[in-house]
Amino acid sequence: PPNATLRHLKEAIGAATDSNATGTQQDCLGMTPLHILACSTKHDMDIYQSLIEKYPSNITTEDKWGDLPILYAFWGNAPWEVIQLLVESLKSYFPNHALDWGRMIVTLGEADEPDSIRNLFDTHQNHFSDQNINWEECAVELARSERAYTERIQRYQSARSKGASTETFIFLLRLGVANRLESLGVGKWQNEAENLINECPDDRYFRVQQARLLYSNLSSCEQLKEATWLLELAVWKAKIGESTSNIHGQGGEERNQCRINCGVQQILPIVVSFLSPKWESNLGAK
Figure (spheres, rainbow, N blue to C red):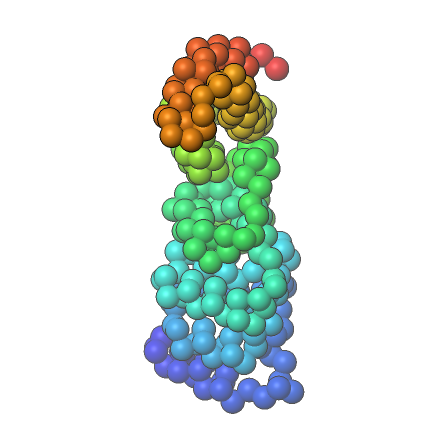
């Protein structure tokens, strides 16, 4: 019976000694007992805790694909308390260990698991926000991946679809630029970026081009916004310099009027219109 098996496993872990290296051994796929447990559909917190306490090195041991047990926990939609335990254990035992977020995102994308990517992203934001994710490279690598049955994907569940679907690729693009678009706060640019994302092509080559264009335009918009902010300050300063009013008394009101009437409202729309990037994807030609 499953419960008896789990009980025997717990007893075996508890009885293990430091001289018994069974808990750190890797199978032919490079998986440790913690990898295998994370792949299971049966998640027992006592076994997780016992394994981690007895063999903490399992947490950062890579399998033959370079992946850690925590990836499989996300991939298999393990209960949130399991994810929390793995996160807390990683930060406790290995506080300086940097996770390869890009690898995990691409792997989950190839498995067509947007929900798992969302859970991974939330964990990054809540616990590892100081660790960088190169979203552009994630999108490009996923765009280049083959929609085929590969050993890498078959290792987990051969019955599921292989390769990122159009919906998953769009989800990844949208997730990767959401914070930057919100920071820009320019509705026109946000709409144009969203339109480009929604034009997601099926062809791998064009997906790469689309991802590159999206991130290139986003960087251009960020640079343009910073430049126009500096231009506004420069024009405002010049207008203030022309004023001969006393900076005391009426000075505060005068400064406000300078900002309103310095001409920035007429200049900036022209500058932005002229320098804004072109969002057309031109997907019809290589």
